[in-house]
Image (cartoon, rainbow, N blue to C red; front, side):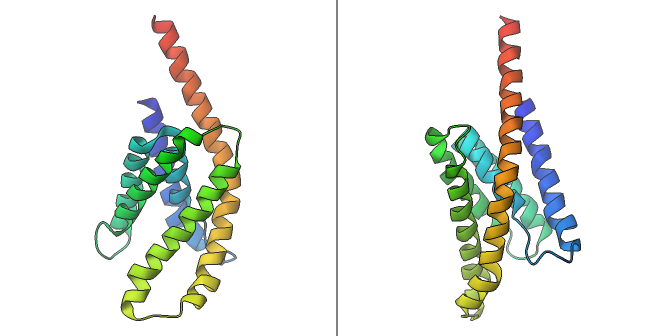
Length: 172
């Protein structure tokens, strides 16, 4: 229960920073996708079920904040939670290569999803412009942010795991 509460607070904080603070910084060309980082990290650490739940929460927050068809972001984030939750069997705490690869794959998939369903359907066919000006900078920012944020999430996960195991042993 404590893990879920802490992770929900982290998602709400990331949502607030991503949508209310980052747009106010004029130096940033694009912003890292914090909700995507949290969703795939939680899914990678906790499994498919929890990844889908956190993806549902992150997607609903984005759907409520942005206009468009409801469920657009929710569908993608639930799939991200499920897909990255499948990689839990490869989870090793100090191995940072897999989360970086997942970050790149998820960010490119997210941007491709947005391009296809937001731009391509409207007849905007200049994919190379979208790729060069939006996808690449956002992917770079997200991967660099993943380097730091994943370590923080791993530290929080270790502390919560220690709390849960300490609580279980004192009860017996």
